[in-house]
Image (cartoon, rainbow, N blue to C red; front, side, top):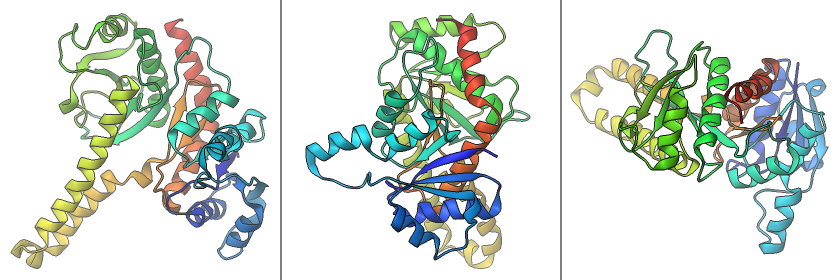
Length: 339
């Protein structure tokens, strides 16, 4: 089984949530974890909960992503902080992939510092999954957006590479033989969105064997029109944040509207089933982390508010990516579209 390096610093839920997630993985799976952080504190926390000591090792690192020591400390964190520490371990071959809850900007700097870029890739991409309605046979209820904030502005060639990387990733994770690719834009017109996006549309339409559905708008994100959505990082980051906010408020509103009604009092079981299904669909904890694509090695970036369940799922996803040789698939996919 693969070894996954886990950054023990940075979660808004605290170090305890990360340790509980790692401990859960150790007793439920055969995945080996290398916890990176304050050794004494991590060991003390592990001793308080059930865990398998044969599948958890600890590497001491004094750096904490939550620590705010001014400009000098911030510079040191960028070079030597916790995401840098786990990326270095993966780069050295001591782990197959890394998982962290550190801020995406710090993760991107760490990956650029320690990882080898894929040949031909000039801009990395953050691949975020998000819930949508499955409308076609075999479609997953989760779609993939590339890029969700790694590269603010991109060339047409970057967008084509994002599509290649996202397509390869989705084929492995969602088990869809030919993912439908959409280019996020302001309109369906092939010339909309400016020169780089219009050129990307032309290039994507010309790739043989791909199911390119053309431009999609924001309204199409939650439909089954595209399995892989490609866009510049600035637009992708805004889109993911908006989707997160809307889905969270939707659950709140549905819960608040149901409680005072006669339907709630008389048919709580049926309403409860619907709410359970809705909450399961929008629960970020089951999605794992967002991989940074464009490098020979893998780093999964988890939400800052990740709890033990979210961390355990992210570690399982990372192990699956290593076992399925996803990094090699992504590299081969980039090679097919050229440089």
